[in-house]
Amino acid sequence: MRRMGLKALAGSLDSPVRWVAVSELADPTPYLEGSELLLTTGMRLEDDHAGYVARLVARGVAGLGFAVGLSHDAVPPALVAEAAAAGLPLLEVPREVPFIAITKTVSELLAAEQYEEITGAFAAQGRLTRAALRPEGTHAVIDRLAKEVDGWAVLLDESGQVRHATAGARVQAVTGELARLRGDARSPASLALSGPDSHMIVQPLGGGTRPRGFFAVGARRPFSPVAHTVVNAAGSLLTLALEQGGAQREAERRVRSAVLALLLAGAGERARSALEPLGVRLPEEPVVVLAARPDVLEALEPRVFTAEPAGLEIGAVPGYAVALVAEETLREALALLDGPSGVSGPVAYEGLGGGLDQARRALQAAGDGPTRFTDLAGQGLLALVEPSAARAFATALLAPLTAYGSRADLVESLRAYLACNGHWDAAAQRLGVHRHTLRYRMRRVTELLGRDLDDPGVRAELWLALEASR
Figure (cartoon, helix red, strand yellow):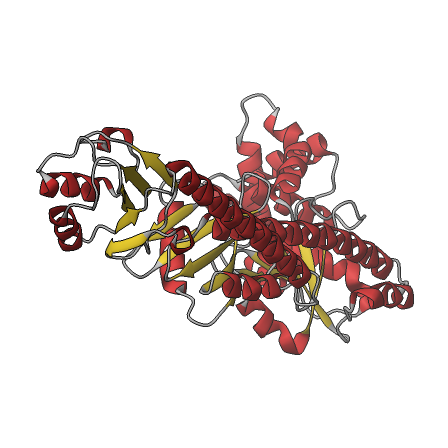
């Protein structure tokens, strides 16, 4: 403004000027928004200089320009005193300077400022893009973002665990806000928090309904429109990196499933060759097979060989994944799992199919944590058989007995006979009947089943069916 010959009489015009307004009203504030440079000739200005200045200050006017040479030869001293006392910048506008010239100058300065902001935003986006192309990818974007806003930034996974943070990052505040958001079903997808000397933005990452992660950025000063543009650009680059990483992970998982099929087919060398581009190595024999839901085994994926065996001819259950772990690192691997899992005994690669079957069966019997297949042996033969298959077997085998009118005592008589290992007197005493009655019943069982009760194999099948039918 000095180049136009404007003279500062009170204060200095340091606050941002967003527009220029001209008014001769004694109270122009109803027509102002704040941050304007108000121009007046003072033709309707009365002696209430204090009230006039107070109203302008309350409205947030950036400054007052008073034109001299028209209604006033000089700016009234009382107005200068009130403006100085209230902290309102007051400028004297010479007669030869038209108001329109001031308006044009401010408009040009605002346009230049906006152009500088836009070019600055484009430059920042370019720097973020170059950071995203670096080997460290998302970490480099977080580091660059912190520099662009002159603050800090942090990257978190979908569970809220910190993946990367710059110096000074307020990690606890971010994780606390994420925990609060998860507990509020009506919470917004992103949030902005402001304090006296701290401002923070938290945004989710990912294009679906479920976030793939989060990032937060903070600074001491409020975020300008340019800073918001830079933050949004960083969010787009981080989301793109996560989505690309997810597609790559899915492709790698398909390769590992194919490698597992090769191992089961006995093509060990071909399997190892297929894994070389992924930088994954198979553990040395003997190996232990872990079976769990895919989300449970994700914690092991970066460390060991994992794959989904669905569709392979090993009796695998779709929706489960397996990991191959060296026997000496089994305890370390189990410590990383959070959920039910099945653990096979040590097997060689030529017996991998049996190991997968052991792990699957152990998983079916698992509770909240890991269950070893070797522990099932102490729980009886039925622990090694799928419950639904065992019940179907029992129903089919014992059907002739259960369908024999209302004579359900044939089933209980057979149970007592097998429990006493075929000793007539002991079995009859258990049932409370004469041994001749029991002999008659067993002859009837033999006829209905068409089986020889003296055959140990038949006895074993019948006992298994009786136990499964309980």
